[in-house]
Picture 1: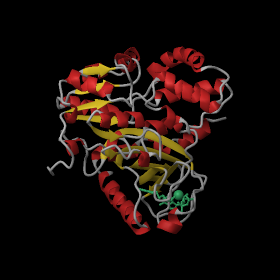
Picture 2: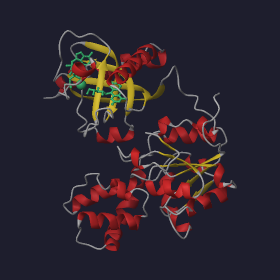
Picture 3: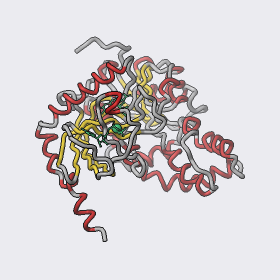
Picture 4: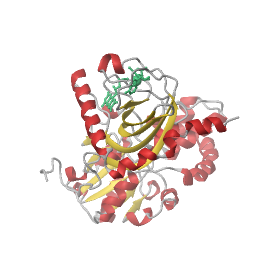
Length: 380
Ligand code: ADP
Ligand code: RBF
Ligand code: MG
């Protein structure tokens, strides 16, 4: 194994809490006739519920005080706790670290009771954590280092041997102030550049390399690919920016991200692969990007499968069905168009080879890939 590049740690402190507040707020704002546009998410992550409520009342000019808003919000918030999805990759990470006996703590600005009821909805999660520290157990929440220092104390570790994994800015600030190593996993897209004080910024938990920090490496990568539970997405092929074929020589049959928001929040942006079905044509190997194309810096998320087959014609408007079976890498920026193109061709080679492994090839026969004809004929 290569020598670790960073300072070694022996335990991990996480906050997997965020996103929650914003999900609830989104629904709530509708009631006040306001539309949540995600712009404020950055102002909310890592805040205490009262601070978050204050930020929203101000931002949207709501006709109520922050306490009033919070009181209204609270029951809804608690009712939603059971619907909270963990950050993509959280479950895999917790299982891995706990399987290797790495002590873990959960440290969040949310009150301890709320953290506990939240994790109670996830099978086995309670046992993963040797310590839980809530915002109500310290005098000051993040960005104060207090929560993290208390977590280290309860783990019986020096702050310098703790790795903090955080998605919020206040959390990153708190972790560094506590003298800990900090990996940031920004939950708000395109904000990576703001997290400069973190020791590393990663796109999603799938990209964490524990060995960089002296922790046991993941062992679930297979021939450069990370198997995922298969997930399914389909729709008519839409027009993109017209760049794929023209600029890159790589046509991508774009799907609209509209109507897929919950699926897309369960899966981080990145490069994936799997099988693609076109009802009248057949089933093909496929490698794809989902995200904002950092090289082009799209304003909108795009879903762009490259079908690994030579077609003699376009198939805009046709129903395209995808079974996504594995993950390759995060989307990244490149110094030149040539290097972007070369990387995508490398993705293609890796996906093409991997899809012949039984683990992945068995999904080629998934009825989902050719079921659009049937589902359409059932429509009357
Ligand atoms: P756009 O920006 O409109 O997506 P592209 O240059 O990316 O345009 O070309 C994509 C179109 O090319 C697809 O919608 C499809 O109709 C066609 N096409 C031809 N061959 C392929 C292929 N192997 N994979 C994906 N799309 C292909
Ligand atoms: N765009 C990026 O900016 N960064 C990437 O890392 C990236 N990876 C890709 C990988 C694959 C397999 C495919 C098919 C596309 C990828 N793209 C990436 C998207 C590419 O920029 C996009 O398809 C073109 O801009 C056409 O819209
Ligand atoms: Mg395209």
